[in-house]
Amino acid sequence: MNNIFNNVNYNIPFLKSYIAILKNKQVVSNRDKTRKVIQEATEELASYFQHMPSDIDEIFDSLINHLRKNPTIFSSAFAFSPEIYSSCPFVLRGINGFESRDIAQEFQYANTVWYDVPVKQKKAVWSVPYFDIGKAGEDILLTTYSIPVFYEGCKVMGVLISDLLLARLEDIQKNNS
Image (tube, rainbow, N blue to C red):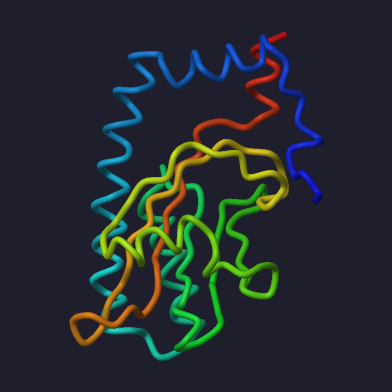
């Protein structure tokens, strides 16, 4: 099995630095405030998506506007229920502005924790911090707010996510040196 973490240097000073970031009271306080802002913004967009835009370009535009209005959100996506449509429009903050693509062709998003857990629990959830190794073009530490979007009261239309960038792996390692 190919281990995606092979290229990450998990030495003891690095792990101590990572844990210190997560335990620092000011960081935790700011993170909690930021998470609340992200939750509210994502829930607002989810209520708009309940009246689903009819075209993928409109979804991309909505995600870009979501990021524009909420500078603390690193990336966002809307993953359709595979029973409806196999598509997952995704927008992230790139070096040269917003980058958009449909990540449904890259992997089976319906099997991911950020999709599967909120669908099964029928409620919004925050993920534990995780490393997104190379998906955004670099190694980053994220946490994801995922909210299922329903239509006709109980049918899952898809899952809307907003990612909070906790740190870039390169920055954590520099601070560790």
